[in-house]
Image (tube, rainbow, N blue to C red):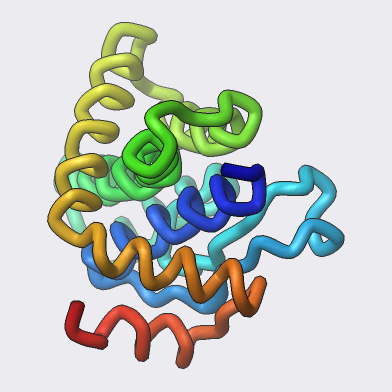
Length: 171
């Protein structure tokens, strides 16, 4: 197995789990020149990012949501995102039996940025729980992961219409 195959499965894992949570996926790519890191990417606009967590919390407060309820909702959102972030690693492990530590590093970094208020033991527990949930979801949807990964290997990049069509095809 080569790195391009590993990357295709990694990105397909993110996409399948995100789609399962109802997130919109704009595109998936394994094209190297497009990104500095040389890794593939999935564009999921509805995921939290470290630069929009505070804005989301302010928005919830403006809408009159009590702070503790807004924080709880934000926490659930972050937990879903953690499962999506761990899905790349889980897909690699299911496909290859191991994972590329370099390729998974940015996913782990993003997950830890979303969990800045948690102590290291809570972060480790979240990582482990998220990885387990991602693995279970991918096992249940493995034919879709394989279809998406094979199509990525052939086309290198998929747009939203391609992804929606592939995700809705019977497996």
